Length: 385
Image (cartoon, rainbow, N blue to C red):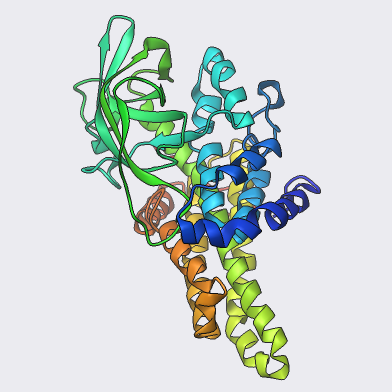
């Protein structure tokens, strides 16, 4: 997966020089890496997908995936912060926002002046996102939002939340709308910050909305079309999650192989144990490349994104586990425990891997479904929602 010539190399150097040296401390201290994110913003990495007219780099999803892989290989916490900001928090405005909304928010997001977050999940509606209960009532020239969101990445650090709420009595997906909610609105507050097994530098927690008022102009897309916004952006967001999986798997394998090389002939057994995982890492890159290319070309890519997410995040977990076993008691000291703990979350967020299997099955069972040749643009995979 190459992206723009030289772009991956530039991000790899940034990850090696800026991100990697801080990774262990970020994990150990459970610290949001504000200094790293500020430097990433100065390097343009918070606006990769934002067109130049709005102050971004104007690159495609292949470049975005390459960036996330390189960051994840150095520090998965940093990667998920940048990923959520650049995909599910910025793309909804880029794809569905009015020109006024784009000009108001995209330059600030691209510069890193404002960090973005995506608030969809609720305590009673995890994988069933259409069952959310947060409400938005129209009051004159404003919308008033009330409810609680959970598992919000970048919570407490974000300056803008994409919030999904029910705007009518229509049940299910058709009653959901999306809103741009600045973090400084009265009535919006951060609830519990969750203790997590991994990704310690990335805050995840509750967002509580108590009669939060936003202007009518902050409605994103049209009333009742919020589920379309969520599903389309989750589809493309899964490309970034897949790239996170590639980065963690690559880091774990690379460090284990370094150990094998240092052991000389005694390391051959270790290398053989990792050979299948190395082959699957290359296969995973092909899946991410296919999904990213189709997304950038505005072709249907739901199936491809789910396949990439399923394959690459399972691979990350297996690679981290295998590498930790190979390293033995030295593994935790050398950071392999961090890879293991960070990898697990990837199988859960932005649609659990069980959900990905359901999505793929639905796509395959459509009457006109076809399995395209590797990398081919054909097939009938449609978008969710």
